[in-house]
Length: 491
Ligand SMILES: Nc1ncnc2c1ncn2[C@@H]1O[C@H](COP(=O)(O)OP(=O)(O)OP(=O)(O)O)[C@@H](O)[C@H]1O
Ligand SMILES: [Mg+2]
Image 1 (tube, rainbow, N blue to C red):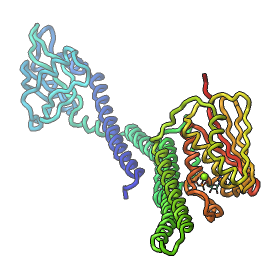
Image 2: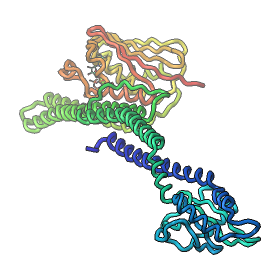
Image 3: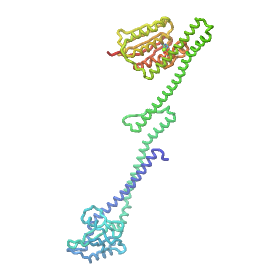
Image 4: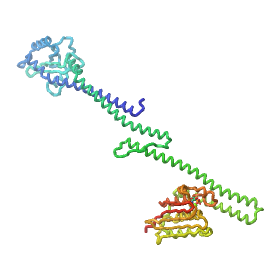
C-alpha cells in the first residue's frame, strides 16, 4: 500500500506535521500558562506588604503576633480563598488561615522567598505550597522585621487551590481555544499544500519511471516521445529525464548497430567461406585430373590444366592477402607513414603496371593533370594500393576498347584524384553498398573474373586512415567515377 514514493513522503510529512502540531499546541498552552502566572505575580507583588501595612502587623520595628492571629481569623471568616501563612526565620510554618488538616508541610523553602525579596529573578517565581507537597505555586511575601533582624515572613499563595482551577478554566478559555484551533488549522492547511506540491513533483518521477518500464518492456529497442526540454530552468528531475532519454537513445542506436554488425559478421563468414571454397575446389579438381588421368592427357592439355590450377591458386592467394590486409588496417596496426611525394609520378607507375592488360584489351588510359601540381603528404605505399584498386576495377568493369581517364586537380590545400571509366556502371541502389566488404552485385558475382569484393573496402579504410573520404558516381552502362582528396605538402 505504501510502496510508492509519494505515499512514503506523505506518511513522513503527516508524521512530522502531527509532531509539530502537538509541540506547538503544547508550547502555546504552556507559555500561556506561564504568562498568566507572571502577570498574576506581578500584579500581586506587593499584596503581602499591603496586607501587613493594612493590619499593622509590624510597626515601629516591632512584630505584633496577636494582630497576625487576628488577621488569620478574619480571613478565615471572610475569604478563605486567600491563603495566608506566617513563617519563622527558618521557614517553619507557624500560622495560617486554613483548616488544620489541609496543611501538609511544616516548612517552606526560603530560597525562592529570598530571591523574591531581593528581586534577583524575573517572575514567575514559584515557592513551596503548604497545602500541596508535590507542586509549587506563585506567591507574594513580605519579611517581618524587628529592628534589623528578620523575625519571619508573611507568605501569601497567589494561585491557590481555587485559583489553580481558575487557571485551568483559563486554559479552556475561548481565546486560547480559538488560537489553538488556528494553529491546528494552519498546520493542516500547510500539510495539504505540501502534499499537493509533493504530488506534483513525484508525478514527474512516476512518469519517468513509467517510461523506463516501457523501454524495458520493449526489450530496450524503442523509446517513445523524446522531445525533452533542457534549459537553464530545468531541475534535477528534468536533468534525470534528459539523461535517461539520451542513454535510451544511445542504447537503441548501439543495439541496432550491434545487430547490424552481427548480421554483417555472419554474411562475412558466409562470403569468406564461399569465396575460399570455390577456387579451392576448382584447384583440387584440376590437380586430381592431372594426377588420375596423367596417361590419357597430352602435354598441351596437361600444361593448360596446370595453368588453370595456378590461376586459381593465385586467386586464393590474393583473397587471403586481401583479407589479411583488411584485418591489419582494421586493427589499426597500419599507421600511415606520411611523406611528401609526386602523385603524377605514382599514377604513371600504376598505369604502367597494368599496361599489358590494358593493351591486350585495347583499353586506353588517359591522364589529365593540372600544371605544376604540388606534392601530396600521404603514405606512398598505401595510396599506390588505392589507385591500383580503382584502376583495376575500372579495367575489370569496362568492356574491351573502353576508355579510362585519371585526373589530378589542385583545389585549395588538397589534390583531387578522379578515376573515371565508360564501363558497365553501377546501379543506383547498389552504389552505397560497394564499399562494404565482400559486397559484389549479383552481376559481378556471376562473372568468373573479378575478386572477392574487398578492393573498395580496403580503399575506403586506407583513405579513412588519411582523414579522407571516397565518393562514387555512376550511371548504368555509361560509366563510373571515383573521387577523393589528398592533403598537399605544406613546405
Ligand atoms: N569501375 C567500376 N565499374 C563498375 N562497377 C564497379 C567498379 N568498381 C567497382 N565496381 C563494383 O563494385 C564491386 C566492389 O568492388 P571491389 O573492388 O570492392 O571488389 P571486386 O573488384 O569485385 O573484388 P576485389 O577488388 O576484392 O578483387 C564490384 O564487384 C563491382 O560490381
Ligand atoms: Mg576491385
